[in-house]
Image 1: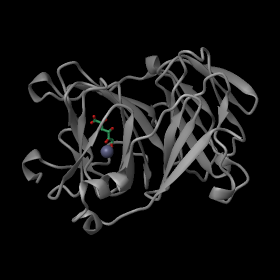
Image 2: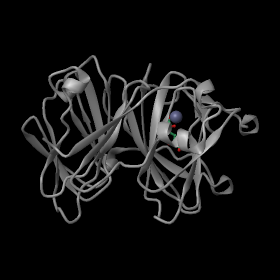
Image 3: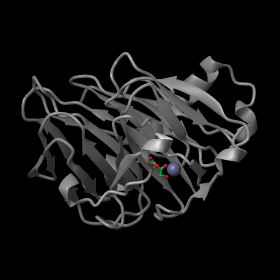
Image 4: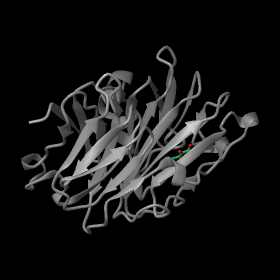
Length: 281
Ligand SMILES: O=C(O)C(=O)C[C@H](O)C(=O)CO
Ligand SMILES: [Zn+2]
């Protein structure tokens, strides 16, 4: 059995969070523990049943074991999985077939895959696999997604401090998936606003995982209905759950990167309701 934890987070209505204290808001939406050497840390949100977290193998390979808790025989019996390696070079063994997963490589693993075993090449500089899994009803082929094959979106500019590259990994440009979408956005030096102008997408929930933020810096992540926003202060290697009705955007005291993963009704990345900045409260 792997060293593995999984925490459950339940779903909320906008009115539920109106009077939440900072502590209550963090308990429900912030996820502080993602990566730890030799461990798998997962969060199961009841928002569209996304499971996300970090897998950081050192000497011993790690495999996500989830069966009874999902009411199935094995983790991907009725699910699909995406992951991106943000650590040292590693590899993955998928039903007995091994493939290199270098720094910044991503992967899509389809439904009905029985074993996905994560490995690091150098235990002193472990691979860090950020994983996201959504319920799936069709088996699509497994595929490695190299960063070099992605043509990033490049929104924003220096004047608005929101210049960034959006790399779409699990996206119809790269792979077929049932409902999972996943990508990695990096802010340019001197830029710190992500996802601005911001949006909601009532059709999909989304989790953000912030990383490559210097340890002493902080990110101010905003959530809530556009006219009733609240913020959570996050640090490097921390994540946040954004319900479908919630905006999700942030600004930090430095530039940084984040991985977004979403699932719901469709796999149309652009299906967003953009909120004019003047309407935010
Ligand atoms: O910086 C951005 O803009 C993003 O990366 C936005 C996310 O991809 C997103 O929220 C997609 O719905
Ligand atoms: Zn979004």
